[in-house]
Image 1 (cartoon, rainbow, N blue to C red):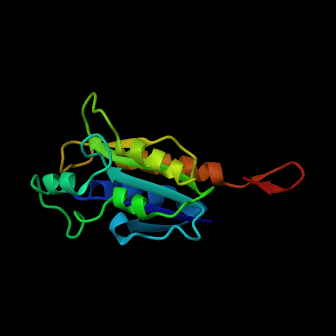
Image 2 (cartoon, rainbow, N blue to C red):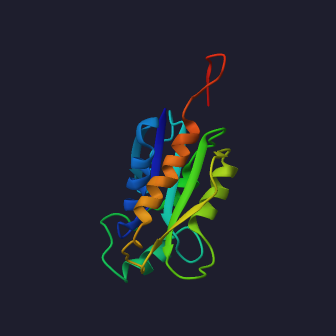
Length: 176
């Protein structure tokens, strides 16, 4: 089986979570990791996992990425196209299994979520959502990740992979 993990990451935190998720999918999937700005095709994928940082209560926009760039050095080329734009140009994805994640500031209550927005967008594109949106915490706008978040991301993805592991029935048939 094949999985596409697509992410947007200005400071490297969301990328680190995406890589941990790819690790967590383990042997259950052949994983392709791609940045949203590459506009990767989901053709041939059995599972799509999409992630982005939460900006201004949801998915980033060109203006919020520009504002973020003023707060620290961003990775080259990452401020141009984000997950929002990737989803804007994505074709219908009927029946494709999907899940979403985001990174967000580690505060008691932060309204809005990039993962929730992406979850709704993917559902409208026809995806079958296999998990609710998941958030991973960062200490500040530029990071670092809160201790333990990489392991939590691996475990989250391992749970998805475990759900996809074939089950052998009493009759000896394999099913998911």
